[in-house]
Length: 207
Image (cartoon, helix red, strand yellow):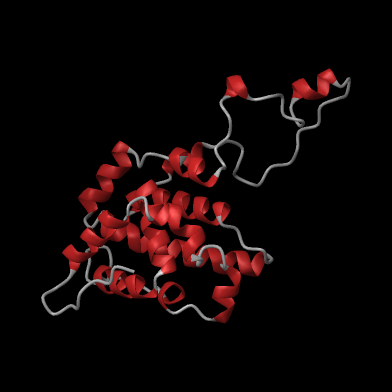
């Protein structure tokens, strides 16, 4: 996989599993993340099919998660509109208490990773996670791409999820819940997927 795409894939995967979390434990979370990462990877290889495309997105930037956060209702309020957070020094001072910072998830000291989220990849991944037919067609396409050359690629959890995979990612696999994200760029995704078809390939399904 292109190094230039690794940060985009990681950030977009992280956004998906946070926006549509699993209700299980660590094992379920790992299975859900694996499915999301495979979907985002396939989407990235379709959208940025050459090393040059990957290099350009690394330079220009993927756009960030702002609109996705608005759609899912997770966008933080503007600083000027935000009341003092109960864990902030200001809130502690107003209550006459000493401030003890709340623990954060490792590596989440700020939201810089969100700037590496690719809205289009998140939308295309949502299409893949909620349509087995589209996932099969997309994987068949990227297996012939430049990214897959001389690589042992395995997208089994995306195209052939077992019972544990489905149990771990009920929200990521739910067509109705994922629809607001999937519909953002579905038409563009279908057009791109169609361009990858060889003359012997069957028509790309619309659902």
